[in-house]
Each structure stands twice: as C-alpha cells, then as structure tokens.
Image (cartoon, rainbow, N blue to C red; front, side, top):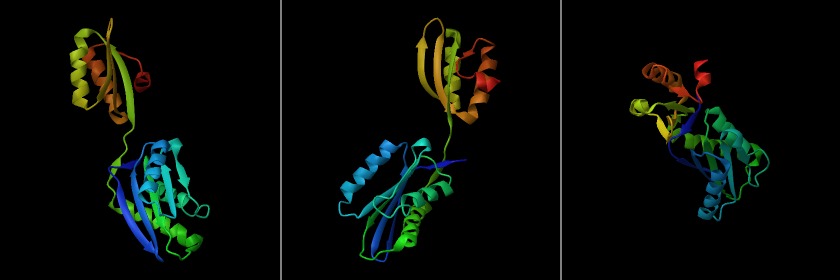
Length: 200
C-alpha cells in the first residue's frame, strides 16, 4: 500500500567538498513542487544546482537542473518509487566544492542524500478516498448525519429540496460497509447517486 510523508524531513551530505542539502516532503502536484523549488532558489542563491523529483501520479517529474542527464532527478525518483511513496517531492540543493564527481559519483550523491532524508521521515499510509452522494427523506437526515460523524467521514455538501441530498467523502475501505449500514437503517428509503458500483 502506498505511503506519503507526514511532514518534511531533511539531510545534509558532504562529498569531496560538494555540499548536498536534501529534503523530502508531502506534495500534491507539479505546480506546488515548482513553487517549492523556486522558493529554494531564493533561500540558496549561491547553489550550483537544485535537482528534484516528484512522485504524484500523472504529475510526476525528474529534473536534473544542469547536472549530466540522468544523474540526479531520475535516480532521486527511483528512491521514492523503491520506498512505495506517493505524493512526495524530493529536492537536493548542491553547492559545488570544486571537485567533479563523475556520473556514478553524482548518482550516488543524489540518491544517498534523498535516502538519508527518508530515514528520518515519518511515513503515513495513503488512503484512497471515495465520494458518495445519497438522498433521503427529511426524517432520516439526523440519522445520516450521526452515521457520517461516527464513521469519521467528511460531509461535503447538503442540499434541501424535495429530499435531503448529502455528499460525503470517506476512506474507500469503509465505503461498502457504510453504504450497507445506511441502507439497513434507512429501510429502503435511501437513494445513492455514486454508490451503485459498491453494491454490485
């Protein structure tokens, strides 16, 4: 099961006078990752390179930032993949120390910096969420609200019309049991818009 990180974690490695400052942190998408990298350039204007890798579904990226192709971003991304992470950004700020490391040395330096940061990172299981929508008579609204709260689901939207329409989000693993419990309590008076596949 994929994991993400609870909070940013940092590392620092010095190899042949070059300083590598690593950070791994939760990150939802490429735009947020780019903003984080831009902020790092402001913090480290004298850095030679800021290489990064993002593992976030279809928005994943691997950036070498001027290092020889394939020596930084891709190896960093591989470390994240190997640890079964999702929604994580790894950045490494490099201050050049005057000694060239060669392609193999660079790959090792960037992967080690990310791996060191991950050693102290707190991982949390990534939960896939499911959004459900149901419509109930007014008499059942209170019951449904109590069940939503008891399950720890998030109530997204409520509309009052002929019926009460409630939209909620909860972990995918709880969805089937939740729908079954509501159907049993509602005695056939609960209609689902997005849950047909759960009951098939």
